[in-house]
Image (cartoon, rainbow, N blue to C red):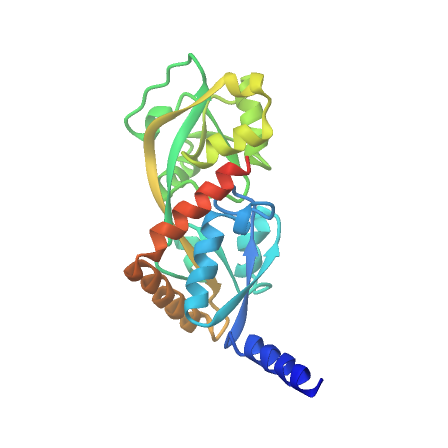
Length: 253
């Protein structure tokens, strides 16, 4: 009995010592990259957690609404978050990691409709759906603020796809992998058949882990995460991890 108890204590001590510390990160809904109900909480989530684990840091995930996922970090309610592109306004409050993955931002529209463009300002005649809290590039923001682009704000990507199908908006920007996933999970077959996404990307958006700049550990965490991410990449684990996670998420559809 004493041997079993001693063995249990050793196992418990080993588990406790597996990680040097813990960090709390916000988790938003942006499938297949992030999401509470996805395998490993999403494609990006798995990479972020694995990179921190390389540095003996465990990750506690807090599921929050999308806009709070970054505003909560900026206000110091959470230690960090992930899945965010850089912009000058955010960089005042946040420390950014190296890029983890990149989004490929495209425009979705109704099937059979032809909307050709070479530059973003070519879309000036059209009403563009956007989701509250999401960032669509510096160029996009500048054109919106100057009044060149007209936007219509919704609270979710699903709401924007429904508006697109109903003709309330003309185009909707979203990642080339996220768009089809969101449609397949949330729209009826009839609704999906009305929509398509262009292949032409207007922005390749690097995604980062972000940390509250006011936190004295922020710079160290960013450096440790970057080291963990490099270790995954240099060992060849990173592409295998991404592909196996993508497979599991798609099989669950």
